[in-house]
Every structure is written in structure tokens, then in C-alpha cells.
Image (cartoon, rainbow, N blue to C red; front, side, top):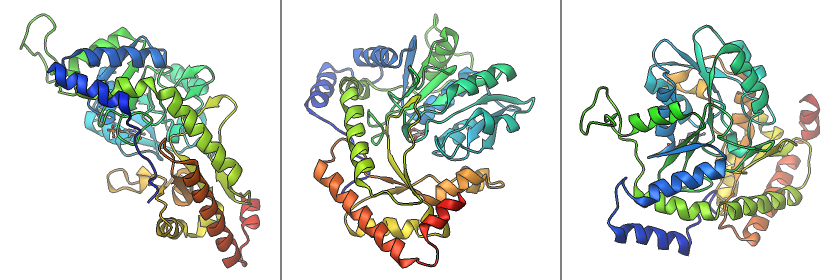
Length: 380
Ligand SMILES: *Cc1c(COP(=O)(O)O)cnc(C)c1O
């Protein structure tokens, strides 16, 4: 089976993790934690980076560091991994869903604006599948309404909006280092910020809110959201290779882009002129799936030994967040899927995926002559 994603673990990772184990510093104290945080802050171009045990904790901690809680509303995109909304729910604030743009698949000032109320305290743009949202207009809108901005960059390590790295533009950024992300620590996460107050507050809450001058004295309920030295050692090794990882993803994407036959109604990732995507996933959308058939298409690929994944379900379709569907998110979640995108793919494997997708789409086009794809595209 050609996996849809996979981590790249090499000699250097073995070396640094072994070093961490040999040193005896296996929990969250230890030199690799600081080293990873400093290297990651430098990579993102932020003053601070605070490591945590996973990306969901990073979101939760970022929200708490911004004093978000009951009585507040936080705007999140309808199309994202569920953690973005769950972290808001943990704080007691209300999750408000906004639609996404058809090209970036993320929030925009246009889709956020109608949802702003006097209770809105923050917005969490998600750089979905590694493509940054258009941050400039969102930051302007947020400043006008006094909203905090948390960038969910869990899929977008190294992506850029103009010259700025994902995670460096909002009040804070959050990252995940789960096994299928751009770099991994097994489980892990990071908060990036330029704001010392946010950093200090998140630091405090991460470690049981222990009093900085008085050991084992606590004046509020904190959390244990720390990353271990072992995880950080893995992270340090991964970060050394991140530019190669990002480069390889571009090569893979270019192969898909040139190899997949152009046909009406078929689109791969849009990459805006102002954007550099981390290309977390090569995304395929096909208008021919409007009437269904996406899941059957994925099943046919699986039979050929190719693993894919569907776009996320919309949050508004889930019981906890159920409400009126938002049209763009709803349609994208129906017609989109992700093709194998990772750094262990051989170029032969990518070619095989391309040939298989081309031939299955040829079959599909021929099997629905009563509704040509060209007509569907014209309606778009
Ligand atoms: C992976 C991911 C998260 C959560 O990260 P975990 O490390 O799995 O907790 C949050 N948001 C998005 C968009 C993600 O892709």
C-alpha cells in the first residue's frame, strides 16, 4: 500500500533520541527542550516558542493565555480538523463557524466579518493543507474589532504569507508535531508568539501554574502540557531537515501537477502568488463528485494499493457543532480528497498514483455521458 502520509525518520533522529535517553533526561527537563524551542522560534521568525505535548494543547493553552473563556465567542472555519473547535469548547467559550474561501480553503476577512458580535474575542484562521490564509485583511479586521488572532499552523510549518512564516503573524501561532505533520515529535506541539506576556502566561499554565518563586505553591489550576526531552530530541533532528522536506513536497506536487491530465472540473491545490504552501497534502477536487462518487473513487484507488484521505467533514455536520451548512465548506468536504504526500515516496510511486488517477478519471468521464464534466465546470 502506498501510504497517504508517513514520517521521515533517519540516522540523525536515532542519534539525538539515543543521546537523550543515554543522558537520563527523559521527561520534560533536559537540554533538547530549550534547544528545540529556540530553533523553532528562529525558524518561524518569532521571539518565543513554547513546546507542548500536542497541537490540541497548544491551541487550548494559546486560548487560555489570551484570557478566553465563558461568555466569549471564537470564530473558527467550518472546514478544519476538529481540534481547532474542541480547544475553544474546552475554555467554555462558544464556537462560531464561518465559511472558507474556495481557493485557499481558509477563512478570510470576507467570511469572518458577518459573524463578529460584541462577544467575539478571537478568530482562529487555519492554514489548511499547508496553504496560508490571506492574513493581511484578517489582521486589519481583527484590529478594528479588538479580536485576538491565533493562527492554527498545525499543517503549515514553513509556509509563508508574503515573506512571513505561518505562525508568526497573529497574536500567536500553534503547531502540531503529530506523526503525519510536516515534522514530527511523535506527539507534540508548539506555541509561537512575539508577545512576552502571552509566552509567560502560557509557560505558567503549561506547568501546573506553579508559582515562579515558590516551589509547589499554586494559586490557580494549571495543566501538565509539557513536551518531553525525548520528543524534543526527535524534533531537533527533524527541524534540521525541514527545508529538504519542504523541497521534496514541492517536487512531489510538481509531479502531480504536470502528470495529472488536465480535464474540466479537476483541480489540485491553488497556490496564491503571495503564498508558499507547506504542501502538507496534495489535494484533488473533482466537480464530477458533486453528485457523489468520491468515496467510491477512493475505494477504487485503495484496490490498486493507493491510500488517500477525504477532506475533513465540516464541523457544522457534527453533532457537537451542528448548525446550518456553510456552502463552500460543505461542497469542498464532499468533492475533495488528499493524495499520497510525504517524503518517503519514490518518484516511481508518484508516477503510479498519477497513472492510476488518470485512468480512473477517464473511466468516470466515460461512464457519465449524460452529465459531462465540462457542463459542471461551466456552472461553477
Ligand atoms: C493536527 C491538527 C491539530 C491538532 O494537533 P494534535 O497534535 O493532533 O493535537 C489541530 N489543528 C489542525 C488543523 C491539525 O491539522
